[in-house]
Image (cartoon, rainbow, N blue to C red):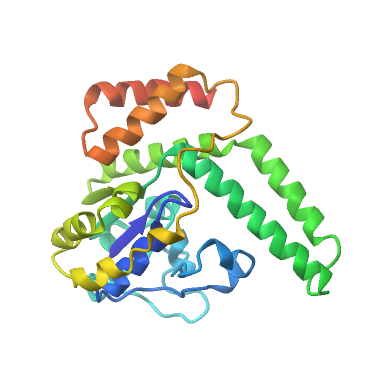
Length: 266
């Protein structure tokens, strides 16, 4: 399979739209029921399936239908998976990985916007009698506990670190592409990915890039950063993003990454 991965809010849905427009067969629905309350967060569609959590023994065969996806029959199919799902996915299903990347500051502010959208939608459904009165309160409490347990900036780091670790251990082909660069020059960036994949209609793919849907940039700073995120940690976060976006992750930076990860784990 051609797997599209990245942190949430990093452009994975955009890449599903791009590759679908390019003529590649994709798996997943534009608007799965699970995303009913966040439709506004991605008006062009999410294109996800239950396989977003990985293609492995718990998801393939499908526990409901019993349908089994064979790796040889799905080599040209495009599937969106979370980074944790990529790590679970059997190696036989990983032919190519398109990993989309977004700066950690934008991830934080976009993630907070996603929560605001969900809360507003749930509030409307409570007022309409579609949800019990305590549904929104329970969800707000869940968000508060999640933020306290893991700040979005740390969540960004853990996922990026896990992606790099998994790719280096299992050695599958990965093409990292920065969300920002796709919006700046879609023909160049999309063309590079389609050339790497060896298939796809470039003109149609470029038409799927819609910069007007972008809602976040570097002008907004995340709030409430944990104390551990001092200047040194932030410098490593920024350096890792720039290196991955440029395809230039060297051994010195990997050493700094490992030390930073050890600090954040304590």
